[in-house]
Image 1 (cartoon, rainbow, N blue to C red):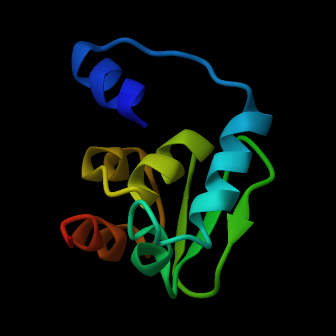
Image 2 (tube, helix red, strand yellow):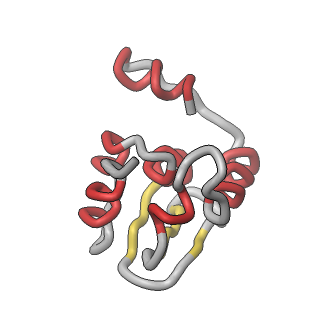
Length: 97
């Protein structure tokens, strides 16, 4: 996450193995330890369009696995990369501490 926090504002992109990013997404979907990811995505369906990750019931939020992970961890700029009826709710939740 922190590398992406630096790369995005600088316009630097990096490809990550989808298997690795999927494992990170799977961890955060059920964890509130380091960040409130589980609470942030509660009641939403997240679905990756570049890999196998999907979770939850409710309004859809879809996009790349990386964008989903970054939004799950509270990085609201990544909500701009997402689509679906649940994006605005997730964007609002990204502001919660």
